[in-house]
Length: 353
Image (tube, rainbow, N blue to C red; front, side):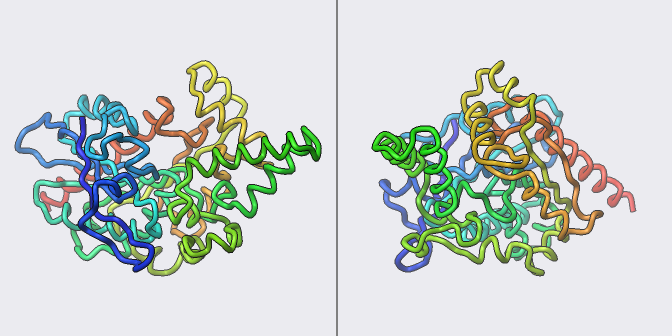
């Protein structure tokens, strides 16, 4: 069982962080999930793995103080790295529901700064999935310590670099309506089905910055503009972000995409989320996607970072739920472990000289 440390709650009225968080607000507050460290070689350095999935405390905890290791597949990370002959500390980052994603990036950068100054910590590996991939791209710009650059590896996974229609109500809702009316006609039944689906969609959404900030430009309705930062995606490849991310130890971009094998694997493994994502892909995307994000969108970062400063990895036949798919998750953990080993080897070479 892990414990949840609340970092702060974003106040939309004052646009500031509140550090003293009320218990009833903890579920929608920025937080860190902490788990028992994996110590296989005492007195050796520790490698931190920070998993940012793009979810909230309330998605994973009933009491907002404790979080099971089965949430966010932390148990699988523990199982994998327990056999790798290295000391590993696994943490999860849970987003504030209302904070602009850029503000979450600042919180993470401060957290990494505090870690990097500790001599016993050899590497910090930030895994940003989906919206947290875009968030992670902003993180190095806010580092205040040189050690944060030298120790950090960033892995952006299934990231919507130019936004996604699934976070864009002005674009997505009309598509849903057209699809339903094409099946049921312009009837009361069609309206009932449409309203029901939108209600479910908004029930799982934060209906705030953490979702709307990754909208496609002009994809958020006027009544939601007060909880939408249109500059987040628009300016993601600004010079400051690109310069800062090239200073870290290594940067990796992992690409997902559904093909004819994906739905078969989801059915065989009983992955209901995966099946749903494959259906979304068929219904709402005219090009390759992972069910939520276009594959072409995930590649866009490669146009802005020199080839020698970015490593691209393809998670073939993979839908958006990478953490919930054992094969994809094993591929991700392999890349992370390999990166840590390379960093350790590089440090040994530097020590000799």
